[in-house]
Length: 389
Image (cartoon, rainbow, N blue to C red; front, side):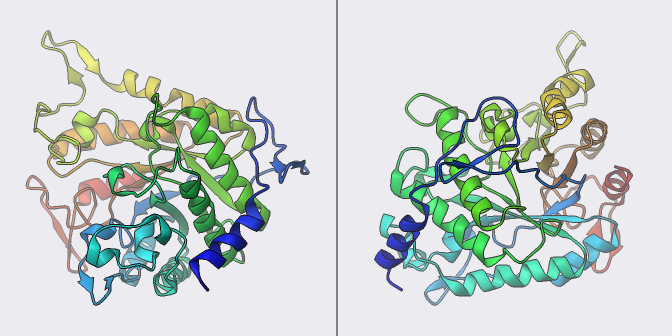
């Protein structure tokens, strides 16, 4: 099917989708301009698990022929995650991986490419979902890079999701494709996470109203196809601030637990770019020895999310953990406070890696006595802490 036909058909189906009133708390939503019966979303369990990065960052991947190399989630990862007692996997995905264009050669995506879907990549996602389900893991599909926006290198996008109508149409198009493709999978086994780490609102770029309008349209478009699907929206300010103007949609929200960045991203090149963060301690202290950031500040940081949960809106922590340069004892002390606070609010979580620099396996830390585990280097202290919560 041509790009023009695909886009015309899609716009015919979704042009009437509008966002209903977004003030206050209500389980009544508006679909296609008409008030529907009250929607009571399924509860959000306190899922605990990991992000798996098999569909992450297309630009990092080797090119094979006309496309980049993409492989499904390894069954070993799913088997081990379940064996260790966890029940959740989040897949942060880059939509460039399933765009059918010549970008792997040109390193640029054109606006005309945004509606072209490459079936072969979606089949790899299908396989990954089925492997996770086979091992009893809930799967959360996330657009880490969405049409018009990514927290990493957003300038690579040919259009802006927040300002360009074509990017917004493409965003709805991709989520409509996923909603139709997986409509037969129960909500308890599969959820959607619309876009990773919304930016901080700022004049001339994006307002909170822009975010709520676009996310609201996606929520309604998906619900029209899969009324029971859990559809998570990330908090504003890179996943740290409750999205007040989406509460009335009753969609669950996702917080990311990377506060303070001095601990979570110490010497991580994409955050601590100039290596200016001082070596962290926990708690973080002022020169006079007083506590600048400690348990109390963490509790205050997560309090709005606990309040949201108590109001009946589902909450999950889609990402947390520390880069492998943070001293291990500092990481574990901070991590225990984070997990304890989240548990107190009945909020589940996902570590950023299972295997890799934030993970329990093969993290590359220099201050850990690793244990051999199925041919991998296991951080037993971290694993024991995670299993506790």
